[in-house]
Structures are given as structure tokens and as C-alpha cells.
Length: 261
Image 1 (cartoon, rainbow, N blue to C red):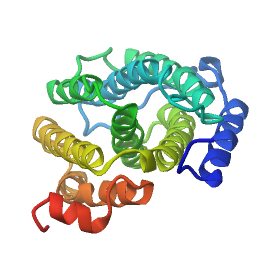
Image 2: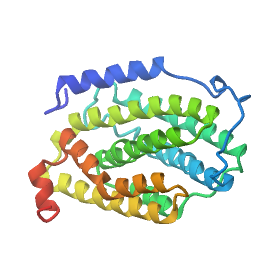
Image 3: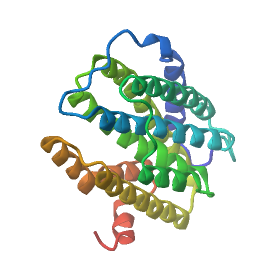
């Protein structure tokens, strides 16, 4: 048993592993005969560039999962943790394949945005405990992916994309749940200085990425643009609450770390 961990989080990991096994799907489950529809007001190349970023994000998350696979059960084995990561590797591989096939029909795969590349490179360069990398990808970045998928699903009237979105969003929600349950079981073993270092690193990562992406992807729609600006200005508060919940820092510790904000 992991010292300081709690049985509910361990049971949750085992349940998530079982759920992930039951929810596996394949590339062929998507009806590729349905036409990819892009609204007239949205340039196809812009749409392809936007959705290509999901592909690149899946590839970065896949690299993270492969990095941490050997570490999630150290120093003490946590039942269900390794299987959750193995299933996430299968999920991310499938998501990347599906996104690549989707954008092939609307303009082809576009390059990764430099701001996102810098964020992924920074996250993957972390050389400390794997908890920081899991928090970066499975709390902050997966949380943003769910927000983005929900937003895209609302304004992109494409039946094919919405079918993809429904399946991918279900997987991403499970990855987010894994990150929270795993971190609740593990963060209690880290000292304060290490937790504070991870918190500062995550805040810098999110701030640089959110405002960088907003500046590089001016949305050609006033209502959607306002929603995205609000997200960039206030989104960190949602991540703070999630990090409080998993035990990275308390609200008082966060205020001290952020200079009383």
C-alpha cells in the first residue's frame, strides 16, 4: 500500500481501467462516408490548421504517456495506474489517426503552432517526479482539450466531426479522471518545496500557452472570439481549483505563491 494514499483513489483507478477497457473503439467505428462540412464563414485552411492542433496534442500526450509508463508504479505499485496509462496510449494513438484522417478531407494536416510546440516541449522536458507531467497533460492540457472540443462541437456543423468529438471527448474525460485520482494518491508523498515548484511551473506553462495561442489564432467570429478571450483571462482559476482538489497546494499556499492574488 502506498503510504498516505487512500483506498477511494486506488479503487477509482481500478474502476477507470475497467471502464477504459470496455470503452475501446476503433478507427472503423467512424462513418467515413459522411461528408466533412466546413461552414462558409470559416476558411477551410484555418479549420484544418485548428483541428490539426488536436492531432499534434495527441502526439505530444502519447509521448508523455510513454515517458511515464515505467514510473507510475514507483516507488510503490498503485493498482490500476499502469493499466490506465496503457489504455491512454491506445486512446491517443487512435485519436491522432482519426484527426489526421479528418483534416485530410478539408485541407490536409497543418504544422504545429509554435506556441503549442513550445508548451509541449517544456512539459516533456520536465525531469522531476512524473506527477508534474501528469498534472500538466492530464489536468491542465486535457482540461483545455475538453473545453476546446465542446466549443468546436457547438459551432462546427459537421456530422462527421461531431461523431468523432463524442468518442474522443469521452476518452479525454476518462484521462482527466485518471490524472485526478492518481495525483490524489501520489501528491501526499511529496514535500512542500517540490509541490510548490510544480505549481509555479504549471502556472507559467498555462499562462504562456493560453495567451500565446489566443494571439496566434484570431477567431473569425465575434461571439466565439469573446468566449475565447474570457477563457484566456479566467481559465487558470478552474485549473487552480482542480489542483487544490488533488492536493498539489491549498488555496492559502497558492495565494502566497502568487503574491497574495
